[in-house]
Image 1 (cartoon, rainbow, N blue to C red):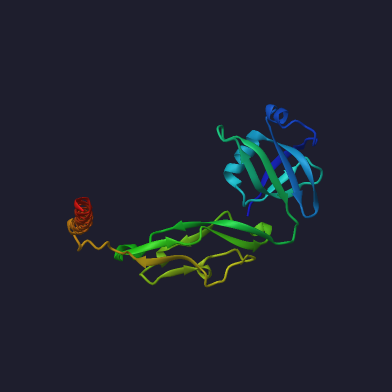
Image 2 (image 1 turned 90 degrees about the vertical axis):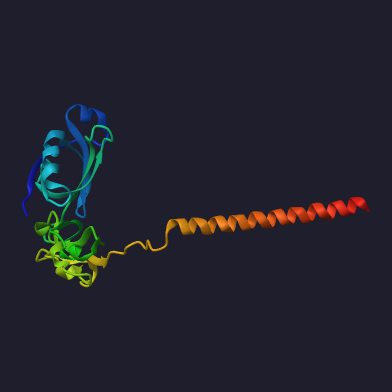
Length: 225
């Protein structure tokens, strides 16, 4: 794994976030198991470049806050209209200890089963693993070429994980599977169904009419009396 160098400068907790942004910074916070929460500012342009390459699963090195600190970008709040970073959370990691992180799954290749009337179902889209910080992957590849027939299943055991990684799922848990495409039954014409509905409606109308005639007849006999 590679690390990205990013320089941060400290802001006071009483600082106005808008003034930080006006000066080209992003109000942020860093924290960790052995790190007291600290309000900081990150250069907005520099962070944009880092984020494009790093995302949430790459270690960045924070400098300018005393001793350099290795951290993960745990969360970013974005402006809904301008897509600018409004606030960033940095999680300072403990060296030598594993982290629990969710890694996106990257589905590659084509499933041969799709050529024999098979439908591929993707069951998991990310995988939670415990891993050394230096081994955190940006994604985990899932090769759909392993789905060769209707009974094929890709499980956790089929994935290539970093050497230090352990998943919280069972090795037999499915990641992707194949089912047979179900064709719609077109043997019963739509017209027959409509005709049955019309017959049923006519029957109800006829019953209602007969009931009405009987009522009129009964009232007429009562009047004659």
